[in-house]
Length: 114
Image (cartoon, rainbow, N blue to C red; front, side, top):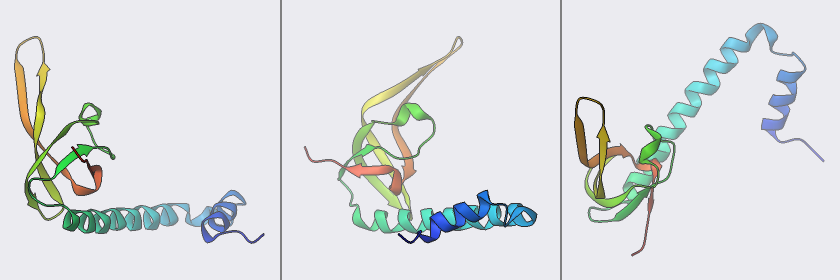
């Protein structure tokens, strides 16, 4: 069975074929990954409409946003503003903040049917 290009690259790295260029390889992979994520976010944003119900499911920080649900109120490029069904309350010793809406990339969202 023939190795996929990704498997071949991983094997070549493991065998030390790129030892002198590891930083360059890492930089190229990181740059391509970042650009591809942006392309996917723009493509996904085109599939979303104002008023769509969505859930935060993708790579997002802070992690407590995972699972938040709401309705899309604004789409700007690949960024989407969501009015949350349930506000997020963050407290510290000195203050309390309440977030009724959040902004995240379209690729970290999934449409939900309700």
